[in-house]
Image (cartoon, rainbow, N blue to C red; front, side, top):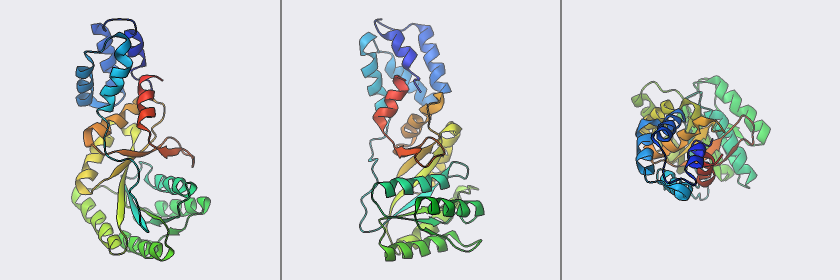
Length: 279
């Protein structure tokens, strides 16, 4: 990413930056999807940067805009449910499968629920993933109610005593009322059987500020506990992750960087900031 690398390089050995440098930095921050509000805040904080202290000071400034909430998944005993929400097209269903694969590889038992029943392709996609990674998938008949599938999955997970049940929820976003009603119903039927320990929202990093707008709608509708940011690769638009955390104070817990099963990882804030500054 390296949004700040040229700027920091110019400052090294100098007492301050000139007006042109600040203008270039502002343009780079906006192009990196940090948004006008966060860009203005960072530029204001960075006015005092000088010479050899620029790197450490800039790191502290950026770090202050990240969420301080826990990034690890909540403790589970004996079975915990993870609801995965998000707009269709963000990589939601694929992220559900990749999260299951990551948890399984760390030694946890996992079950999936294909509750995005309004999109038949999502059910088929999750079943294909489940067969590939060796994780059971609970699904219903064509057109089944999402809440009914979620309930059946909760009962099956409790009986099987898996550690995690990950539910892929419907990704339609017509308006906030529909969203609240649909996700609320799923949550209520699940919690009759098992506790929901996480609600993870999937956001596509390439949608930039539009992704932040989506996140605000979901955060108003449900108690989002963490984010999965997809397509967060080495592109110059990677600053959107910082913008999301600064705007919503919701921690990014996982990132997806490609289409492969292993292109998914726990979000590391230190590595991310280092990439923004140095790469």
